[in-house]
Length: 127
Picture 1 (cartoon, helix red, strand yellow):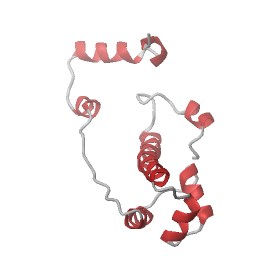
Picture 2 (cartoon, rainbow, N blue to C red):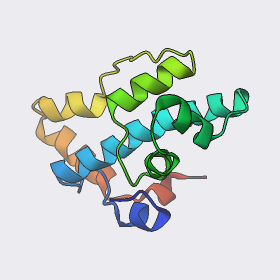
Picture 3 (tube, rainbow, N blue to C red):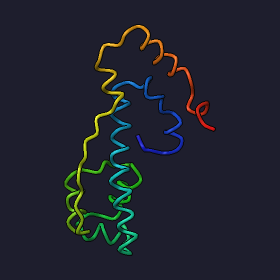
């Protein structure tokens, strides 16, 4: 699935998404994080995506498809980008509180509060 504003509107709220839908969304979020950093570095170094594609030995059209979300960013391409841009990516793991909650047994009152919170749309929480 290409990540477009139309497709984003189709994404179910996280509590309604299937496991496969959540994995697909997580894939795009991870790619977006890396690609955003790469794009910032390209701007800093006054490099185009076409120049980057040439430096890593791939076609400009492939790299454009990666940045558009049409093709997945693989680790080999990421490693090549890291090398030619003279950067180093680090990974930090943060355990989500939501994951912790879903793995523990909740009492009846806690389940009711979580159910209550899930009834509201994000728009209702903004001010």
